Image 1: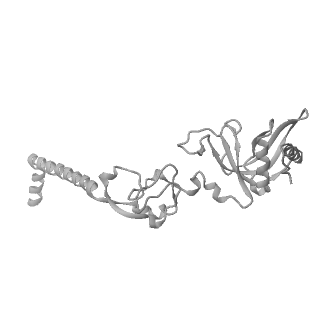
Image 2 (image 1 turned 90 degrees about the vertical axis):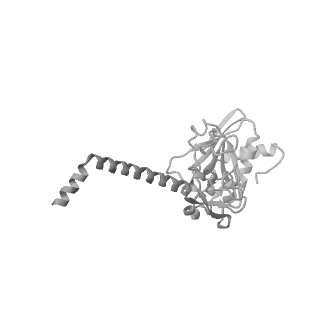
Image 3 (image 1 turned 120 degrees about the vertical axis):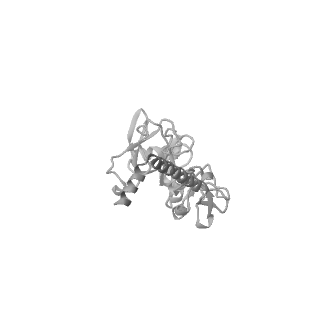
Amino acid sequence: MGIINTFKKFLTNKTTVTIIGVVAGVAVLVGFYLYRVNQEVNPREVIVATRTIAATEEITRDDIRIVQISNSFLSGADVYTASQRDSLVGKYVNTGTSIPTGGMFYTSQIVEKEELPNSIFDEIPDGYTIYQLRVNNESTYANSIYPGDHIDLWMSTTQDGLVYYGEFISNIEVLAVRDSNGENVFDVTSGGKPAWLLFAVPTDMYRYLKVAEFISGITITPLVRNTSYNSDVGSTEITNEVLLQMIQSRMIDMGGNYGG
């Protein structure tokens, strides 16, 4: 009991309490200082390029290596680290940028293949051609047509005093929506308004659509279908023989019988 009482008196002594408080405060400061030094000095493993990788190029395992860089040098930069090596391989360098030899891979520079503006051209089936339909904010329903949506194309024209309006081609999958600069309108950096819908059609349909561009008075507009309307309902096809024959007759008038 004597030892316990002596210890209690020691702890209740003002001088002792002050000393303990000072020591604890110093310990906290020293610990925080060592933590900060450790954060500044301890290296972080990041990924750098073994060669200059140009825009739209695929990143392979041979293109990357791991180096150690001080945390203070990174300053919170959002770059790929060693633990993200597997997720980096197979991605692409975005357009408008490149990775120099020895340069780090900033996440803002790296995209999936389908995010590249021209990646759609890699998936075109044989016998198909990419067509660009001129649109605007109104004809895309306030920019509510998205890649992957299926649309129909309707045509309107006047001939011999008669007005023709109806579905021309059905079931077209939209591949991209671009602004007047050719940028993806859904890219957060674009800020542009829809100017073109891109889709793939059989070459004969492409020919008819291109000829229609040069015929005065013909207007082609997209019609959006509901969410249940998809590629299972049928293939892309011309559905209006009257409108088709009208274009074919104009093609003959223009000097070439391309109607088949």
